[in-house]
Image (cartoon, rainbow, N blue to C red; front, side, top):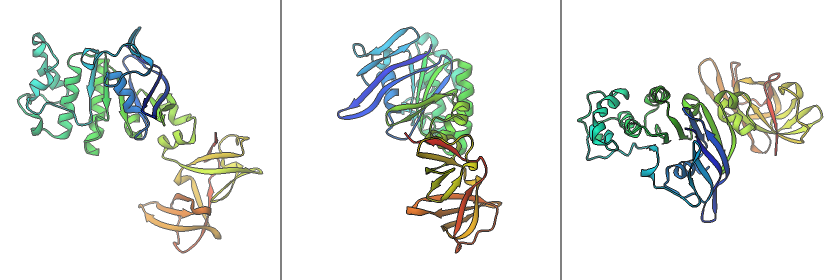
Length: 339
């Protein structure tokens, strides 16, 4: 069943954590809530789980209202599974008892099957402290999925695992979740994680969803420079229209450097990749602040007017004592009108 958030708002005292949030996590898909710490994504998860009361709006599961201002069923009565960052396994129980905790006695025979599905076959007698971080997260996933919840909520489930193992765990987790047909809402602050695992991504900023779509949509058609920077790794440069170009802290960039038509707005944000910028020696250009060889390329940090900084990755030789003009390559810049 789909999980629907309808006009959700939430505050902690005078601090507004969420403002008019509406979106649907489709049935059988993995939806990621992506954003920096404090943007409200964990608050949304807490409302869906029943750990927080709904203050405004409602949350529906399929055609039925799950929670609203009048009703707030506790977590244990909701058809929802939870996976936390640290796994939250019971330390005094072995894996068999942990995974079987939410199952009736008649279904305890399914525990061995679930351990095998998450790659922990034959490890039922082990205790959480005898497992690696990745194994603990796999066990937590099995425990959450074994009862067959209609929705699975995951809060930064891979954050405590080292980066190499994290990638494998994400791939394995996505395959398992898709195979089970679970409706999943996963919280993360890592764009790479969202792209790796999600079918749809809700990008959150300051308690609002600024864009909701598939990874492809967010990568190719961001609604703002900030969203574009998240998924492309590009830099944001402030600009002001000046004639047929855009004035920046790094010089006047020609209109030909902008992909598509320049906005009519006076102020704009420019999105540009470090390897799509060229350097031209110019005594009145930007000062070099750092030169970092990367092998085939050199990463150069430059400082322009007002202390603004920009990174350029180039195969050309760079003299640290020389000043340079920064020139974007043709059609390499994306311009967004500043609201």
